[in-house]
Every structure is written in C-alpha cells, then in structure tokens.
Image 1 (tube, rainbow, N blue to C red):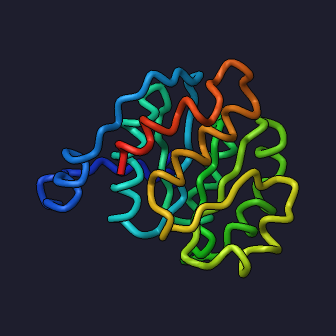
Image 2 (cartoon, one colour):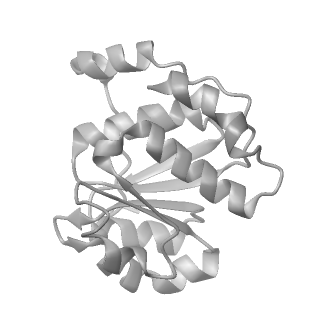
Length: 175
C-alpha cells in the first residue's frame, strides 16, 4: 500500500480555499448511495478544492487520491472504487493510459469514469467517445459542473435519485 497516495491537507495555509468553502452552501437533500471516489489529479491545490467540495456535497462518499497513473493503478487493483475522476494529463501519462492499464479493474468493479481537463470538449472527442467514459468536465466549468456530472452518473445507475430540476437550487447555492 505504500504506492497509494492519501492526501491529508492542513487547510490553514489556504485562505482562498477556506473562504470559498465558507461562502458555499453545500447542503442538499439529495441522498446517494455511499461509495468510493478515486480522484487522480497531479495539482495539489485543485485536488484539495475538489476533495473539500465533494466532501461537503457528497458526504457519504469516501475520497481516495492519487497523483499519477502509477499511483492510481494499485488503488484500482486493491480497493473497490465506484467513481474514477481523472485528470486528462498526468505526469506519467494520460487518462486514457490509466483507463487502458486499469481496464480489467474498471470493468470488473463497474467503475464510473469522469475525465477532468483544462482542454475544450472538442479536443476531448477521442476520450468522450470511449465506452468506459461516462462524463467529461472542463476544469473551467467549476465544481458545480463536477457535482452535476457525478449526480447525473448516479442518477443513471440509481433510479431513486431526484430528477435534475430538483437538484438545481442546491447546486445554484454551491458556487
């Protein structure tokens, strides 16, 4: 397990993050099943922001983190993972490399995949056309779009999740 990266953050160094989270209203009556989200992102600050936001918005999910393809593969092979949120460009490869190398575990576990990137959706067409990718969120779209993408994937696999119109007020207050 030494290859796993579990990040524990001391948020005292990040005034912007603290101010952002204090301004956000992350309370929602949405009830999703619990599970594990594997966030694969090499930028520490962005990973902190995503972890904090999703921790508030999806409190029943546990977050596991990795900063590269090499660090993510052992997590996929040894832990049940429900969602894979993966940055398109990592220090040791692309999201597609992780999807290809971890295909057995992703398929076996039924992992839902959402790709994150600073690239436009037009640049991401080859990735978006993959059958193992359920969503794409541009980092510029913000955390609201990421929360919506996760809830859409949950909605597709869990019929009791409320319809989109019921979520919008809670998400509007989020950012």
